[in-house]
Amino acid sequence: MLTVGILLFPQVEELDFVGPFEILSYINKIRPESTKVLLIAESAEPVKAFNGMKIIPDVTMAACPQLDILVVPGGKGRYAAMKNTAIKEFIQQQAQKAKYITSVCTGAFLLAEAGLLKNKKATTYHTAFAELAAYSVDVLPQKVVRENNIITAAGVSSGIELGLYILREEFGAAVAQEVADKIEYAIDVTKI
Image (cartoon, rainbow, N blue to C red; front, side):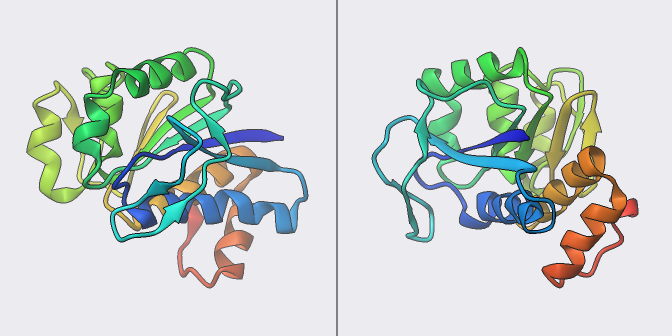
């Protein structure tokens, strides 16, 4: 079973984390106990996302187990989150042993602040390409970009593709395609 953690912070963009959450959880309907998806935040208090959704974290960063996959979403709250030392240290600590460190949209900036994207290929929200390039990142205008164990996804809805990409890598194209078909998401997972 893969342990997946999705990092939350105030003003996170809802679809940035709900998309990957849905995809990476849905596999359990096809192959039970394939993943365990945890919502992680700095405290156990509810997190208020950008459009008003309130989310109750499963675990705090301090109590979080070692993850196989970390998903870092973006959104308006990324400006404060990027400068949060506890978040930066959490990402760096998880990066030491995680199989994949991933981001959705402007979540790439949290990875950049943690020093994980320097001189690497990555993507982010299309209006933030130049800003990310200033971190010595080779920014590619693609939905999903992978370099070694770091996988970044472009804007907001790209988190769905990120989830399908991870399922394809870990469970095979047939399973990832079945998840896409079951949620009625028209995509050829072999082309992500």
